[in-house]
Length: 335
Ligand code: COA
Image (tube, rainbow, N blue to C red; front, side, top):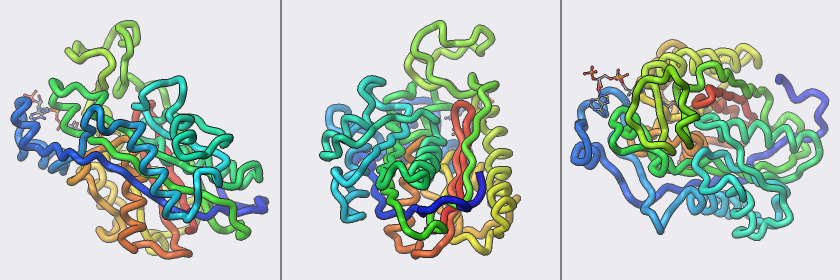
């Protein structure tokens, strides 16, 4: 979908927030749990450490709630000012009720609508794009968007090629209606191709595992990944969606203040930067400290970039994410 033409309203990002668990899990910690090394992990992924929840103290729910509460504080708003909450996550505790409903209750948002959205690592960008469209349609005025995953609850720490990549984090943004229709998302893509879903999936029972899947000794309820297949997909898709966003809006990298990208693997980010000639200072990276937090990563980056004072009103930013499904999403925003 291109352009804001025909919409009477624009969308303003009124506030952002994020939350990460206290516990730091370093590469050295992982090397004491499995046959791996700090050197291998840094070289292959760029990750030095990640945060993981302490059971009983933190969870997907607490990270989601805390990030949205901080975003509301940043916006100078209350839960009751929201008319919708969208939580993007593959690790919410229950499918019924959605975590969005529980968070809405905790923050006094009832009777705001609330639902969880499943689009894996693309989830936050999916939710941001959807919320913008709902506000532009005139049906909603203020939407809280949360992207979060507690990946430590769904990876198998006996599986070294999967578990080393992931961490836990949440990022949230408050979108509100604005009189200026040029403010907000000016271009967006939400896409998927389910053909290759077995390259990244979370089976609940034996029947979910496709018959031709390689024999992997991973518990049910834990993430399975064909790393090389996902790597190939991510490298080509990352570059393609950024190029498409720029071509479709007639913008160049010079016009963009920040490319706010899913943190999957430093080699995937570096490859896109190199192929597109993007300068270091415009592509924020925090994978070294937080790993890949799936739906949490783009929202966490957005909040950290804003709080570091790297963005000003009127700036244009590009969001990009890709992940299980396989899914991908991008958007161009005038802040
Ligand atoms: N430590 C040490 N060795 C490891 C290891 C670890 N943590 N994990 C795997 N290895 C070994 C493998 O057993 C293999 O050994 P072998 O050659 O003796 O068989 C070797 O390292 C190479 O394994 P491979 O899986 O081919 O490594 P890779 O270079 O593809 O790197 C990933 C693995 C997971 C880092 C990489 O494939 C990747 O980043 N993929 C994308 C994942 C992603 O981004 N997922 C989320 C998408 S949103």
